Image 1: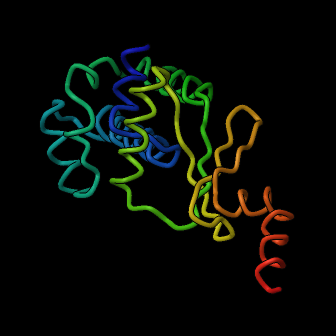
Image 2: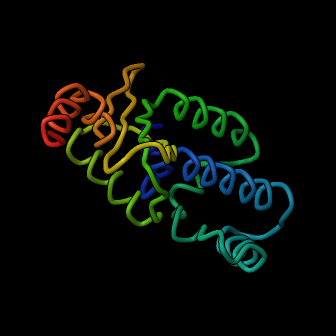
Image 3: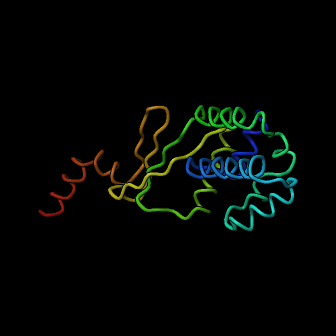
Length: 165
């Protein structure tokens, strides 16, 4: 099952990306196993034609897909979903929305450097200034300029008052 999880999360770093991928897998497996009388390659081609933006063929190879059959598909998909729910989630608060390729770079960096299977969740907080907020295992840290200003508020006000005189 670890290999299946690794296949599912490969190149997916955020919760929405993984949920979309699991949903895509679910839709394809139902199409192939219950709605189509075709072999895997034909079913992949037909599914891809009906869902051109699905990128199914680049997401899952035939070795992975052939592990599923009518008898085990429901149980295996539930196992994958349950395993995904066990992943730790790092919530990253940003002042603006980042493009998906930059979010993926962040996800790659985190997985490589922290050697853990984690997912990231992006939240937009326009109140943050020049920085980021991180939430991990119930602990929140604000690494923004806004936090530094709040932290040093009294010293900043004193310097400002001195400058006015």
